[in-house]
Length: 153
Image (cartoon, rainbow, N blue to C red; front, side, top):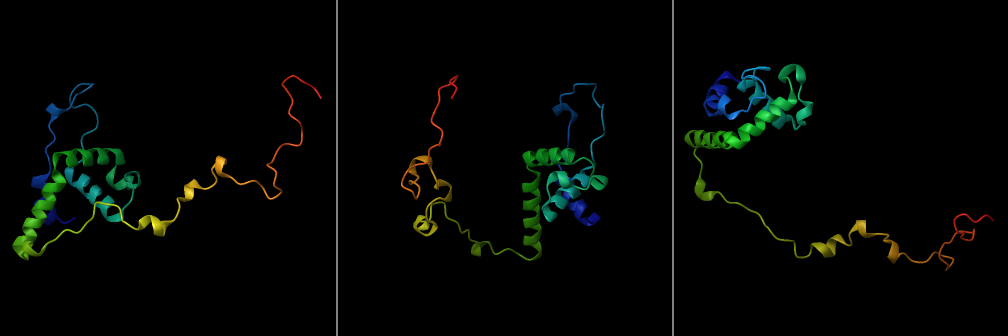
């Protein structure tokens, strides 16, 4: 990530306040928080590569769970929506967005003919009560006659 890009993103990063946290030990104990730039780089890395959080390179970004925790904090604070809006505004200034021609396409209903083309559900095959009798015409039974418990033959 370039320094120029980080200078545009940094003002949008939510500030962590110590008043929001409940400490089990004395305030300030434990490891210091990761720098916001490193956290942002890790989040961009996950988004670009599509890797899982636990697959983040530990030697570069440190603990994946700490990065994910900050990601959740930032998402709750509205950071990513703010970055998106700032990016749209900047692009609108540079190129101009023709908002009049924008459209959304989508459907929130079942396809009317989907069941005909899909056929029966493959997980419904072979239910015990619906099985046919075997080729010999007689259902399978054990050769040994049934005994009650404790009987000897």
